[in-house]
Length: 321
Image (cartoon, rainbow, N blue to C red; front, side):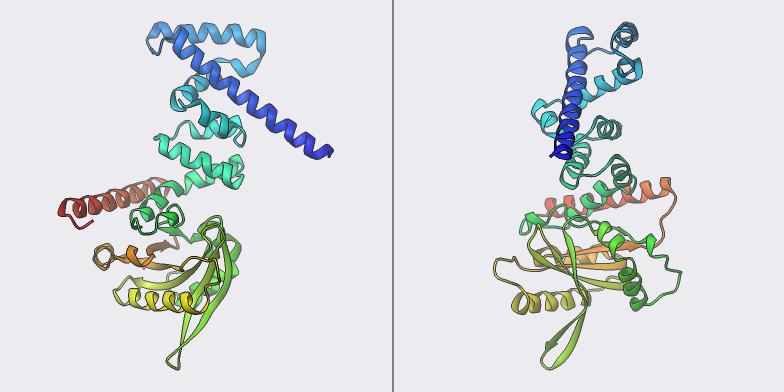
């Protein structure tokens, strides 16, 4: 009882402080600066911060006061701020403020709220481009499967496996199983490991699915196939067969149809588009066992987003979307 009360007190105090900072930023922007950023306005902030800091402490020094102004400008909906302040600390918001778009800020804010991420975990999610990678994967998913949006990523970062330049599919699978906890963290919240080398007997012949997971929120089995090389059209037929078998023999009452994730060393984006994988609930993603330096990583992810959007726009203009 004592610990619960202490935790609730800390949450309430944090929420109250965050809302105070938001209201101060809004008040200064609207009533003192009148939403202007001229040199005169800058001097007002300097003067005001000195007055507030002298009376109320370091929380109101110039640097933090400017953050409050940014906070109020970027998060304009008070109801959203009220909701988020119950789960996010002011330190969380300080990490979100420099992000470029409001969609990105809200994506990570909701991720913190849903997964109870600390500030360090939030920084890691941002550094590994989770928002951008999910956005790339979402562009593959059709309106037939709206509830699996924000479930998959493209690419997946498997640098933690420590694989060298030459390895076999069984080496990749074995490395994933050795580092299963880290792999599940990279997959994302909700994934639960079920089985490796899932045996399926079809027409008296044995087939083996590399990895089988269950997603608790989606209430679906997720079949994962690992491919060393570039994606080819035959991979689609193989995954479709596995999904139909799982749907018929493994799906439990109340569960939704299984979906598939094909992890390839290299994607074949035009083939994936022509094969319309998304209609069958199949996502194809690259996996990277080595990460480039930060600047190169940002550029590669940026290029992937542009390419994906261009393909979507071409399909829309041609009337095939």
